Image 1 (cartoon, rainbow, N blue to C red):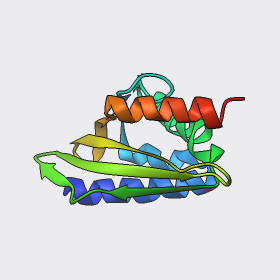
Image 2 (tube, rainbow, N blue to C red):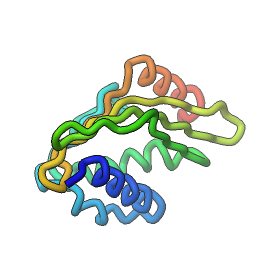
Image 3 (tube, one colour):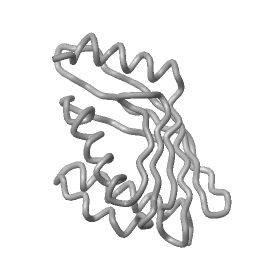
Image 4 (tube, rainbow, N blue to C red):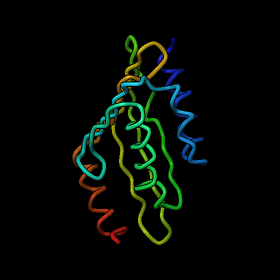
Length: 143
C-alpha cells in the first residue's frame, strides 16, 4: 500500500461526501477504532475516537464551517511526505463569502495507516491561524 496514493483516494472520497452528504463512503478508509485529532481548540480542535465518531465529526465540521461559506478551496502546500505507513503534508483552506473578506487558514496533517485504512490522523493548526479563525467567525458569522 502506498500511503500517499491511499490518502489521495480518501481525499477524493471526502470531496464527494462533502458534495452529496453521504459520509458512509468513507467507512472503508477508516479502521473501526480510528482516531481524528485537531489542535487549535473549539470550534476547530478536539479528539474523536472510533469510526462512527470520526465520520460524525467530519460531517459536523463541514456543516459548522465549510457550508457556511459560498465557496471553499483547499490546496496542498508542497508534496506529501511518506514515512513508512504514514503521510504528512501542509495544507491551506480559503473560504469565500460574498461581501466578507476571505477566511484563510492552514496547517499540517499527518495520517497513519494500518494496512490500507486510516487508524489515526491529526490536523495541526498553528495557534495564530486558530485565533484568526475564531476572530473571523465571531466578527463575520456570529449569529
